[in-house]
Image (cartoon, rainbow, N blue to C red):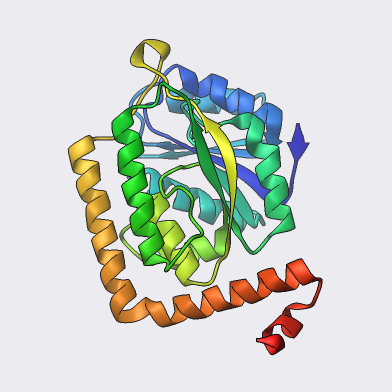
Length: 272
């Protein structure tokens, strides 16, 4: 188990069911501290987490009175984490799909690249629904249009480390990015703000209902939501964001050149 005063794990949960307690206990074995946000659950999640917190001093629990969406839950936790002095948070699902054993690797990458967001690039098993794969490929392709190139290997995978203050700056004042549009809008707006990315491969598991799997993704409603967010982002890119995005990409290329050639960032800029 690793402990940090700068990096924590955030797990938003809504009616996760029987897997919640085991997932949180497993995460605590790999990393501390951990913050669970119970997003208006109507199951026993809030009670179970409060009970677990009495024996786990590095577990904190936030209970929201009504379901507000994953993005809203993460932003509430991000504000609480910043108030406690944390700089970064690894956000992961509480249903057991995301790999607790990869937490340390992602945290190490974040420490090496503190200005960056560290994004999971999922390794799928044969059990993954085909329609999920096609939908996320389309969403990732649209995201690359919105950021004028590479940088996000998977637009929807929720296993990520965010620098907290930039995340709150780009999404805090907005009303969007509160539900299943969170991952996509958060990364596009962070990159528009000049936050670089690091992509790391990570396994993902899909559970059937018989295995205790729980999904609140509604194919029609949430795909319409994703279509709307991509439409808004493309329009905003065309009319407002593309000059800054081009400047950020030039800066990132210079920084990468400097890293490869052992020069300083300033030297790389001057060579340009």
